[in-house]
Length: 182
View 1 (cartoon, helix red, strand yellow):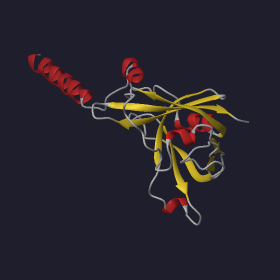
View 2 (cartoon, rainbow, N blue to C red):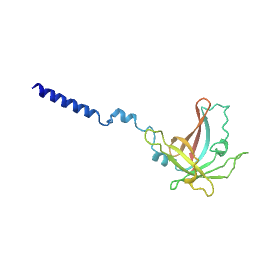
View 3 (tube, helix red, strand yellow):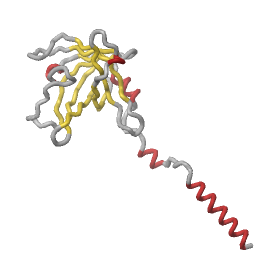
View 4 (tube, helix red, strand yellow):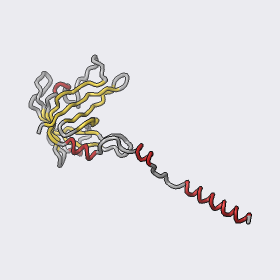
């Protein structure tokens, strides 16, 4: 009888050990902790497409004495205020049309771009707006330089994106505030 009890206990111990070696199971708490905190890349893509005017570029956590000389290797921030960003679907080839007057601004100039929503994957961060500038004769696949902006808010009429700016101590943001043009 003692041998049977020992055999049953041994078998039970083996079953418990084998059961604990399996893949981790999702619990209600772990599923909530791993859930995405914001919209998916496809939701952002749908929310960003359209024609937008850049109304303001605000400074967030950037000291007043800090100078941002230009953005997107293109022009000073002031030249982008009032620009129209055309972000159509399909092949995602769009444009930025400059509409600001100024010494370094090219009022009426149009910069062709190809845009998309960067999806870092689950647990790797939030989706970002990204674009590459295309010059005459360029193929998007051959252009290796591009730009990414953090997506903050979109509701169909308003779009807010942030551009991180590294500072000596920490990081600030340029906050791009758009309204829908169409």
